Image (cartoon, rainbow over all chains, first blue to last red; front, side, top):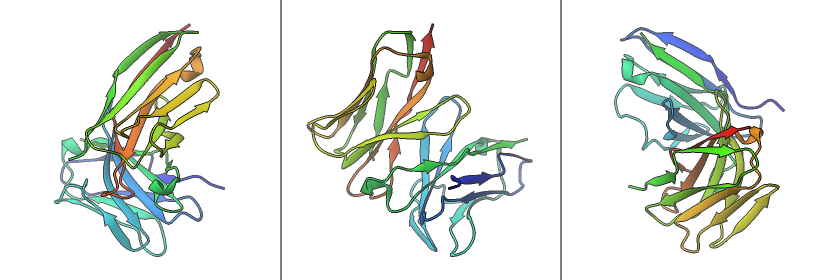
Length: 116
Length: 112
């Protein structure tokens, strides 16, 4: 059973460009979480999605950031007009039901985003 | 808002020694999870604690959930070089179902 797949592993963008990060959850998982991690820091919750629904986006900046998890295909985290401060590792995690119901979150390898 | 604090931030341990990392929440938690992240890797789930005062063991790792469900600890005995990594706790409250607040982690370095 393949794990959580994130791509690309590394992404370089210039200021003002758009960044699209993709996450395919584990097979059978319908819950996806996105986190941001700066070097030497913990994971900051960004957004929690189920298929076609955003459940909690309280950790996501109101501007330039958006996330979706369509009925078919991977979850997408989109960052428009990137700035240097967006440089970070972005991790996606998935679970079969809400993680709080005793289910662990399975993490992907992350996307390292670098803004020039 | 909810805050999860972890101490210490760094832990240097001699191989064979024991150590403990602590996790404290500003609010009462419904449950808490622990993860380990190796350098350059991704977080890997270790355990979840749900009940007040709960204690769970995994070989040399002992996890505790406080009586008030506002703190937790991870104790590792006879540290090995394979224990190197950063240990994160992540807490969830009943009013933010599914949303986990991660601590900043304890980075563990083991000296042979």
